[in-house]
Length: 358
Image (tube, rainbow, N blue to C red):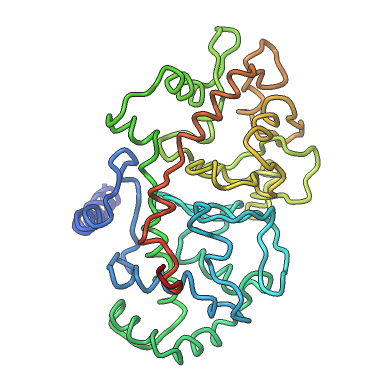
């Protein structure tokens, strides 16, 4: 009984804190109601406008890399929904990395990061590309001293965190704050959800098909997409082996959990603005959305770790593939294009502050 009382009191205190900081954040950054409130802003990194601005400066500054050649924005470009056009991310000295650059969108609602989920917060996530020798290649002490000696940064840190002494913890916190503001919620689909626009018959068909799990025996046809990319965020933040290969050189989540059942599992990312973020999959193997649909429809590779949601996702009784018609594939692609949010990629608040305005 004592443990229950302590737990309830702790939960009550957390709720008070969460609700006390939430209203101003909701108002300032206009959080979409249809995304829900299942997010947590770290208690030691509350949102403030000065820290967001500092994070934006750091995000676009090539001086955060060892040779002053790339920034976070090199792999996460605003016009490409904070992704890039490379199959695999390219770091300093043209170093080839392991995986495709994920789009940065609606990260406030995320609970894990990277394709293999190895980071538990945006603050923790930022340290990986900064220090990875194949990405930005920075030594932490060198980075701290480097930014300390750039005249513009100590005053910005002072405004954001009440200290002009720069350290890696504050660098990570600033980057995380900026990234939490990268909210995309003004696509055609969002306007329909909010009741601002009526869907066409083809759009209704596309939405229903995308989110429906097929049950062939009952004649229920579906695209099976929502099983991994469900909710208005178009991700359930789950990990899946989606049948890309029979044998895996990149074992994905298994490397983190050490479980054989996790072999080849990668995070199902948000599909927001997906029409802008080609190429696709963790290794960028598909050049367009048609190839992605062809994979799920006709080219699933079976292995012991293949996700049960893929195995059972068929529109054909006892089928081995998804079994969509040509029209149904076109309908799903229509829905995916409905997720494009031009106001997000063009938002002045997300553009490179080092570029001169025309």
